[in-house]
Picture 1 (spheres, rainbow, N blue to C red):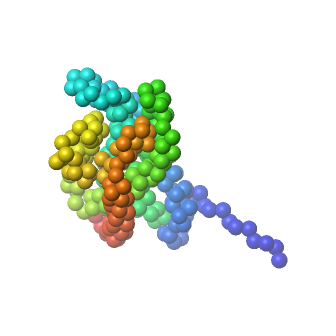
Picture 2: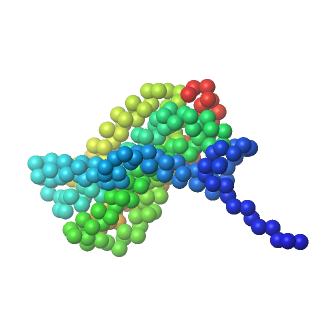
Picture 3: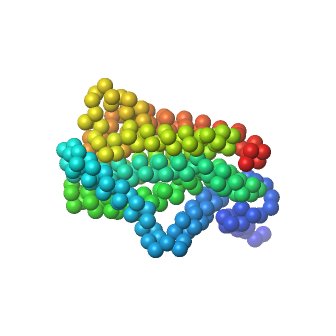
Length: 275
């Protein structure tokens, strides 16, 4: 008897259109995410002069403004301030852009939600993976700046673990807010307000240790505080957050990831009636 050969996984585009069961394997789920990410990036950069350089240009423009205001006009005395700010700005921009986009992704892409072979849970993940590409584009610039200013620390090898932790945190939040937004259209506006507040409560342009002790515990309730401090520790050799803070963020990410997905799965049964 001739040996059977394993059939290859169907391409992502076929998975979206082929008839049959809605259930997709994890491999096809990943292919669909990557397919939609490529499509979103191509659509964003189509007919632009700078193309892929635009995300980095926006971050560099914001960096220049923050360095001028908080490095020159209001000098905080933080050494290597441009590198200090850019490391926090990259992490925060990924978080705010991804979560902000995920809030309305089901409303904006309702035609994809009605695709019989597309798991709707893919769409919030696409929203947070697209700005991750911008992070990967900005990271070499940060590394060059760090090498010229302070040198690159060996602890940079920890950075991928921090990215995974932030990705899990963002996935849970994105599943939660995107699904609830289908039924309560005030949620996107509320999320934008919360993100504006969190920007000032995240040590992007100031150091956590410059904050009075009685307020540090409040800022540390924000998981992005620990993540930004951890990125600086990994990339620049700054002091690491305590183990307790890492445990808090890890547990919060796991709880939000599981709770957000379960909420999304439960509410998705009624998406069609409310979109």
